Length: 392
Image 1 (cartoon, one colour):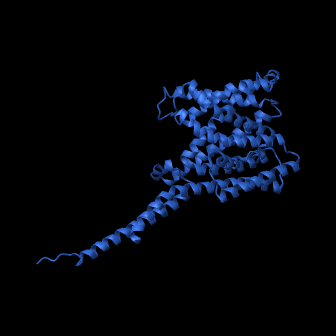
Image 2 (cartoon, rainbow, N blue to C red):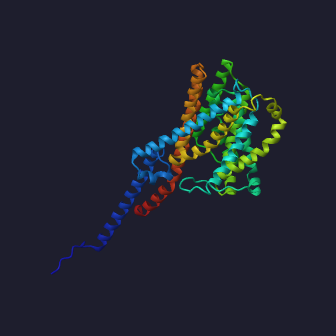
Image 3 (cartoon, one colour):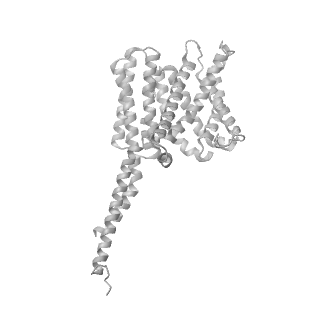
């Protein structure tokens, strides 16, 4: 007589299976949510595109790569600011032609983009990866609205740097975050959370305190502040228009860089005439100096390189980490400027910088957490839908 190992009651067996299935599903959802929350902490070290690849690499190698990329970004960005300050406002150079400096850097960027595009024809893609670039008048016209904003951004940025010291430069054009919030609401009808608004309030407070302290020291330039505010506005507009124009260049940032700078080179020519910089250049006594043209070309190369190292840092870390790194870089840049120019600042002056950098860091972190929460919502919704039948 065979004995079957089964439940004496089939209905009880079915109910037990359903209960185990529901509990198993609930446990799986809980583990999933726990892993989602813990992944927020890993955002500061790993980007989504590098997560799977990074998981196969030893931690030490991965950390060294990230450290090298972040160091490269800091070096290029800080060097570019000091180099531009020299070209725009050096007592030894005495060149009062900020539009020409910006124009020349656009020319260098166009030449570098085209050169790299041609090199990809003879260099394998595993050695050099760069999109093919050809001149298209239709695309050039499509990019024109963005190019106008782009010209304003780089021009006002350089004018701000010309009239303000490198140490105060971070505070002088710190309102990009505030304009992001305003333009998002006005143009995109997007609201902002209370914590993000509080972060913007801290930035505004630091901006106003910094102006007060610069004025008290007698080093304030209202022209520099004005250009800094306009530069911040153009930075925000540039981000919005970039999203609209990217489809015209097949989503390629490098193609967009090429067409933006081609338009800028064309539009700068009449501006050089209107603002009298052609006459300034004719009277300039260092036009035949190899050192001058070498520094100008180097400034253009660093202006081109900042786009590459920015993308590289985002690739190896994450957008959140990139913004945090940018904030820390601004802090280091300020300290280096104080040391290099041998300046002495008051406690309140330093407080204004801390408020600006702290508010920027806080805003970046809050927005990163909000984006992560938004990404997690579909998972949480599905978990609730799965639990509902069990409770009925």
